Image (cartoon, rainbow, N blue to C red; front, side, top):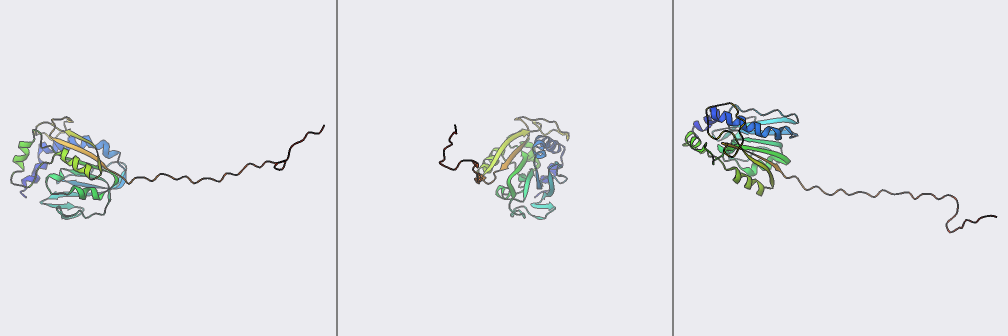
Length: 225
């Protein structure tokens, strides 16, 4: 894959878009709790956030069809993790550079876990610039609506799909805080459905009958005049 497909994430417009995306999804990430989280990013210098209720992060960066970082593996092969290994998975433009399987992403997400996915919207003013910067490579922008439909079929509940960023790829690496239908990027937030909880069965507690002191059963109290 030509190097320019990776260099796009180091450009000033893309750094600004990455910052806008982070502003949009960080409230969700801060509320996520668990022991392990996974960051899959197309940006070479991307680092995981530091929410208060999450433990260990595994960081993988995409380069030339392979994962680099904490684990080295081919991007077109099954992810080298156990089922339900992560309570949070953060995909930062990862689906644009590699044929990652959404089924594999869902597999390694724990029941009830949070999935945050970002990318360049193909229906935006960024498309001509995107096509020019990634020409000659296998990179392509993914439709957030199509991704949401595929996730729903995989029993993942899509909580929201939000467009973010400026409407054109301006040469600014500073977050604009822009959110709207004209934004060049999107944030998709979804949650994997957990197993149906079994109804709680209450065990009947033995009740001790009150002791009636005095007369025997069937006896009548008589009055003495």
